[in-house]
Figure 1 (tube, rainbow, N blue to C red):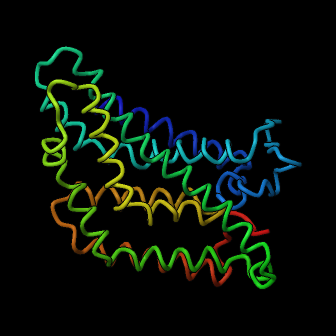
Figure 2 (tube, helix red, strand yellow):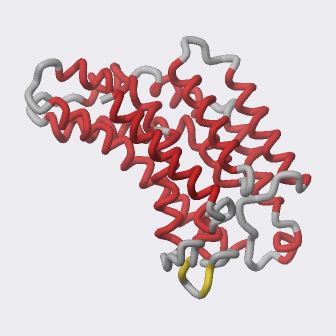
Amino acid sequence: MAAAVLALAAVSWLAMAWLHGHGFADWPASHPLQAAAGHGAHTHGAHVHGTAGWNVPPAMLWLAGWVVMVLAMMLPTALPFLRELSRLLGGRSHSGRLVAAGAAGFVLAWMVAGAALLTAGTVLNGIVGRLDWVGSHPALPAGAAAILAGAYQFTGLKRACLAACRSPAGLLMARWRADAPLRAATSSGLHYGLVCIGCCWALMTLGLLVGALALPVMVLTAVVMAAERMLPWVRPLVPLQAALCAAVGLLLLSGILPPAAGWP
């Protein structure tokens, strides 16, 4: 299972690198507000026209990009959970299918989070579209969001979610049902994904907030998130994450780092 997860993550990273290298560094799917509004440098009407001549609704393109990001950045961090699930199943028949169901539940949780983010972007787009000062300061919302993401690292919710993420065995034992293993595996993966969303959503958003440098930022945040989940020591990483978010926010506000997409 570990080899399959890492291979899928590697393919997803290659897909993101390909998109980044083929004129999609600022593709509308990189920003939920842009996808919701259907605007951007590669849009026309209600569809996106990429360098390959694609004609895809912006919301679908954004969600596809979000799934690729999840597979690349988050699925490898679920390996401790998947190992615990495999250990719990032992020699049970079809254990591979049950572990895959747990992984699918984990990814499903992040897909739901992406849909929620896109919906929130639709609502916010309608609000900020009426504010002229936002249009004249397009980097302000992204910069402020990055700084708030840094502040989130010090909250009690972050600490609680991180503790749960680092204890997949306890989560599995609390939710496991031997009489319905497939449902229990999927449900446990979904619950683990929700807990990890509470732990990592702030860092995941950094890749959505920046434009031309999105790929390096995503690589750095992926390394930090993996270290947070898998290394024995965690406390020094909290100020590091906060500093990373604040640095990205300040670079966005200063104009050194371009936001992923302009606000309408």
